[in-house]
Length: 258
Image (cartoon, rainbow, N blue to C red; front, side, top):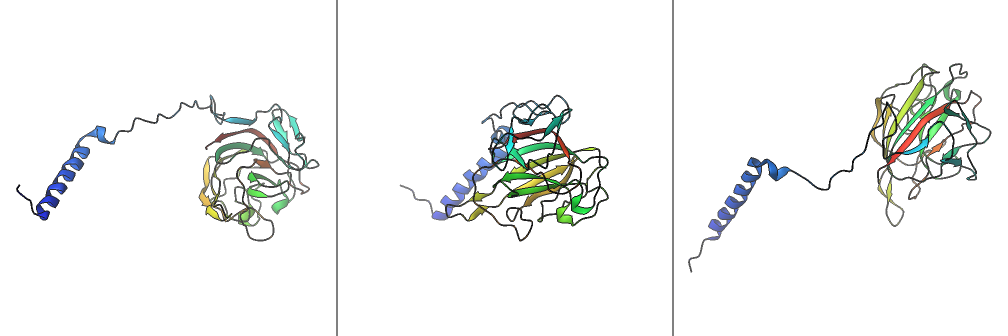
């Protein structure tokens, strides 16, 4: 039997691989993927309307999807004229359903005649994952930041006490504003260590203000952020204890991305 030198065999193999690669480059079908087929999702019929696969959290009629954070009793904020207004006497509210990774749409309004200054001006908060009955979790700040000076990692669209927004996209008090959020929850190892951190992408009034921002942990008013192990959690809205007029919300929906 005729034997080929090892060098010849190597060159022969490379020639076959090269021929295969050339074929892939010349054949458009070689790079076509046909499965799995993405499911069909219908977008909302009008601007910011929930898509067909969304979980509607508030449609202007009731708070059936929400509960009081402190004791899980029915949420008692004031629903009127298609919106819900914070009732500071009843505390924070959170979704009855728990979520992990998701896309969220939420609209909010600071009263036109708002008073106060700094953090005491229309203050509330969106907790992307509520890990306790109080102000525990990962907070996106909500407040009047139209000509209202405060620390930049505490203004509207900041990751509170962690990351200032890329720009200030706030509208005047009395005008409706929107948040569109993509939340990527942290992943924890079996020993409780952080395997993958949390990330937030946020559009404020259609403007990108948090671009896949990595979080250092949960929100704390005093002290540095840190992580606490959890699996999934409710989405929470804050009834901040300042003395300014309470803000309102409307058109809240979420798309689980798990």
